[in-house]
Picture 1 (cartoon, rainbow, N blue to C red):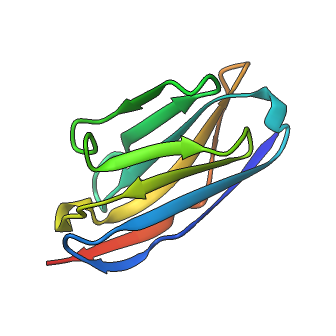
Picture 2: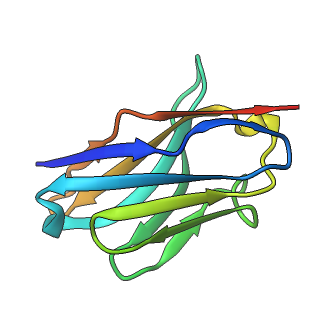
Length: 115
């Protein structure tokens, strides 16, 4: 089992920046991939960015060039969000996928970008 806790969400004006953090606990040695998703009311959860245990990253088109996913180690990863837009407003979730392809989710953190 892996437990995830996000932090760093908040309220920011358009053009501003926020950095989200996700801390894992439990069976962290089994984590292969770490990711950030976001969700707005009435919409499906969408992928924002992923990072593998080897450091390979992948971004959604909406995040490319503005957001950066990184990690300190196998238990902490981040999403640096720059040049934020009102359409980035969402609840952001971190996800870990283990070696058995099991997914674990955090509780989410709200990001609100005002115009």
